[in-house]
Image (cartoon, rainbow, N blue to C red; front, side):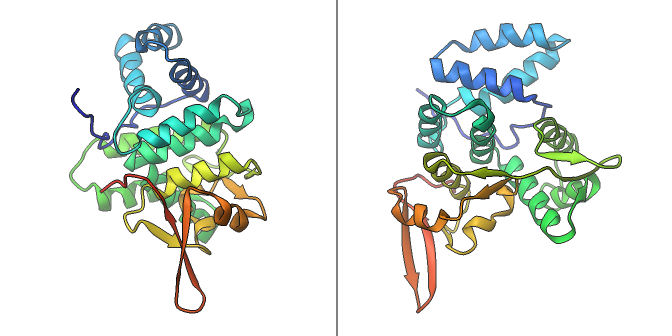
Length: 244
């Protein structure tokens, strides 16, 4: 079987949370992708719009990629015991893992929220233009991702095209916390990050980690702590195929 490569953009449509939930349910049960296609035709006007939305949801949950296959498998196992109000964590982590653009956009959001308490759509588009200077589809994709996570109640629109962070979700479930960090760190080419900075990854801005986060990382079999010098500790993923 031909190995699929992660999509270069992948997330370029507005995605409602209920649609992502349906795709996750289908992936968890091992259902056929045709079921998703049929269902979306009942939810979305226009066959072309439904088809493009179907492609995004397949890239999110139904397609398996070598670089993130183990992250996906862990997510589907976690989905069996994850409460409905925590499924946003699974969608967010899988989007970070599979969509480079989603990771870049949410990282920019997180940095601006930390720096100035909010952001506007123009600021995000300008930052993405610096990375994807020759791709005309990027501005539309930026708008669709912002629109989607606003519907997910992660950010809130204050003025036209200006946004602030909604209240943060505190992660107390050890397995879910560990998996989200794995999904985020798998994108970092350095393969390691400072233990002090791991809780400040800007792309994880919607989430607040429990006070015992460092203890959970030290005890988790998914991570390894490397010490450099007297007081520098770095978190490294164990046993994952990193994205090049």
